[in-house]
Length: 146
Length: 297
Image (cartoon, rainbow over all chains, first blue to last red; front, side, top):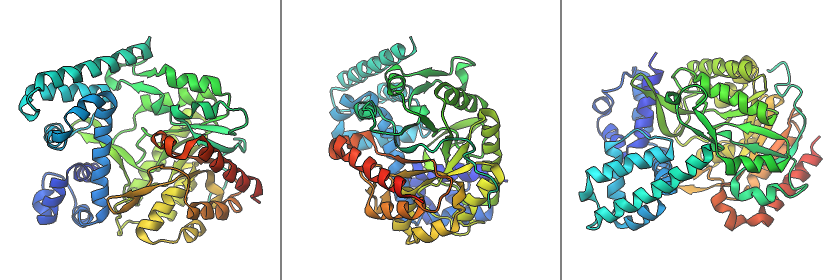
């Protein structure tokens, strides 16, 4: 039974328009990393041509950006001109979503610190702002548990 | 066909709303609602299995305070069970479901027919969104087994909610209605019929919603969701963006008269749309749903 592999591949497609395009181009090659049976591979090869796969990709991005925007809205607003490129690069480096908003934001900040070139010139100030927003969220959560 | 009422001795509650913090003033208004549907996952912080027993789940006090103050009957609507996931059931999560249901006297629990967790190495990880699995027999077996486990651990009625799907698998083993009927018959669970999710599928795939109702065992329907939606990337999506559109009301009127075990109608909307609909708009939806509730056979 390869249901787990199928679900993994389907979720990866929803997370990656790039993988969807690669699967349209060559399903066997794009999905070769998954242990799919022929029926499952055929299903996903058809799925990437459906308009709803675009919707799934959008919903995935909405979910992931919601985590960051909930904790660090000022930071995201500040980097809006480069936000799409920044998030594409971040999500490529960290394709697995952490549903815990504070942890996801902490990981994002660590990634920004390791990749300051993706930010405008005031990178240090932007990262400092993100840190302050995360600290405020962590303080709220600390209160939540006290 | 299901042989027994899956709602068991749960009372007929009337018309309720899905709780969110923006609604606190409305929820606390005497007589505004008959019950409150709660997504418990939004009221706690889950530190994950690595936190260890007793340390994994923590209340969010500002949210829980709303429940303390409301004094309404409650039902639990979960988003974290991932009933269709091909990964082992998370027993600590189910224990938390049971603890929450006991704490708030939830009359029933429910979850979506979807998977939100996927296999990552030797453990689970988040898919990043709720995805609908094909309506296959092996998925059915998995969901039935998990539902039986939840029912055994919580002792409460358990419902599964039909999902909107943006990708279809047209070679599925079963039709959606047959899948849901079998789930209820084999698990002992019931159906939370989300009429707006159904309407999404009507709009996106041209199916007839009333014929879909004809194909369901409506004695399994314990709760109904109504909501509004919006266009997203060329598809009509379940965005909970305001009052239900007229076709959803038509489906509700059709269903209410022939779902003998219906216990409640829940209005869902996202708190970010409150400035658009306003409390008056929320009250108007509740009032209309109450008229349908009162007129049911």
